Length: 99
Image 1: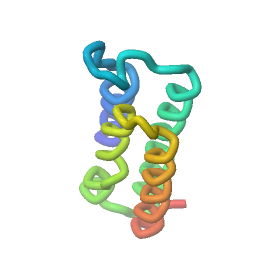
Image 2: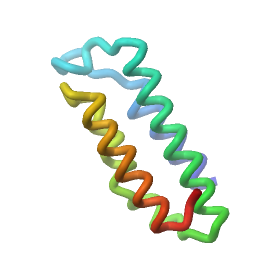
Image 3: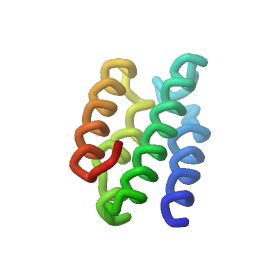
Image 4: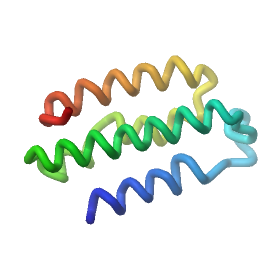
């Protein structure tokens, strides 16, 4: 339940909320929205897999990639930054025992 609530919070705050006063976040093209939502759902699926594999929820919640997903939408080089985050995510979940 805790993980489900965290994933919904991520969707609400990282994906749905926009900052009209921010230079980069004022407008968001569809492909950027798709990539961000896909990254959030990938994180959620990997987190669920790790949790089922015996990883502690505390360790999953402390993942750097989760925090980085919150900031990536403000990056001018969104694709480059997202690529780094996805790589970090992969490494983190391999350590946690996820697929």
